[in-house]
Structures are given as structure tokens and as C-alpha cells.
Image 1 (cartoon, rainbow, N blue to C red):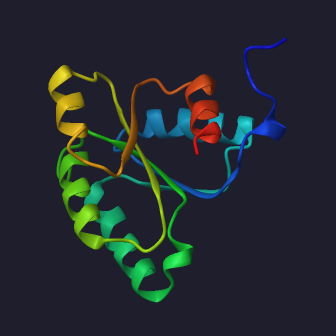
Image 2 (image 1 turned 30 degrees about the vertical axis):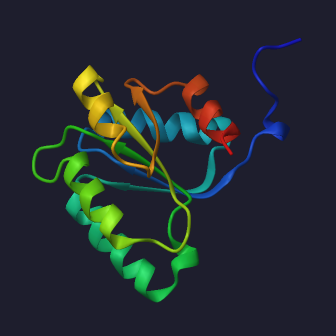
Length: 140
């Protein structure tokens, strides 16, 4: 019996967002997402401000069109992941959006800080791999 579940036992998201300023990481994550059938649609944003503006507009027009899942880089130059999270919580989306933090190094202080946010499902250290994506696809 295989350790990894079959694709049939995993959910596929309608829309996934990647918020990350590193184009190489984004390229790799998108490629893996497509390979495992992660979602129908993948959108990318290079900073938290740009993503939050888009999310705010979508939420006002039709909350059901908000992304199902967001992979959020913690360390970005202008609007980092923490700043995005603060505003994301205040936005109070009607639709449940799963949010996963990603970073090149997850420090104990990052984990402690992440635990203060109920909206965070999990933290992953980069590079994101197929096992991480399949874990997300199995989450409830």
C-alpha cells in the first residue's frame, strides 16, 4: 500500500493564490500545483498589498469568488506576510479561505507568531514539494 493517497481521495481547489515576491519560488510552486492537479485556477501576487487590494474588491462583489487557498510568503520587502495577515483578519471574509504560510526559514518565533492567527492552517518551509501540496489537498 502506498504512503501517498491517490488523487481521487484528495480535494481539488477551484482557485489558489500564491503571494510571494520570489519569481523562482512562484514558478516552482505553480509547476508542482499543475502537476498534482491542485487547483483549476492559480493566481500570483508579488506582495501582500497587491493581493489584499484584489481580495477586498472580490469580497465586496461576490464573496464566493474569493480564493479557496492562499500560500503566503512571510518574508517580502514591502508588505510582508504578517502585514497581509493583519489586514486579512480584519477583512472578515464570509467564505472560508485556507491560508498556509511559506518561508525559506521557519523560525520558532515565526511559529509562535503564526499560532496567534486562527486563520493559518499550517506553516511550510520552502521549497514547497508535492508532499506539502498533497497534505493541503487532504486537509478538511
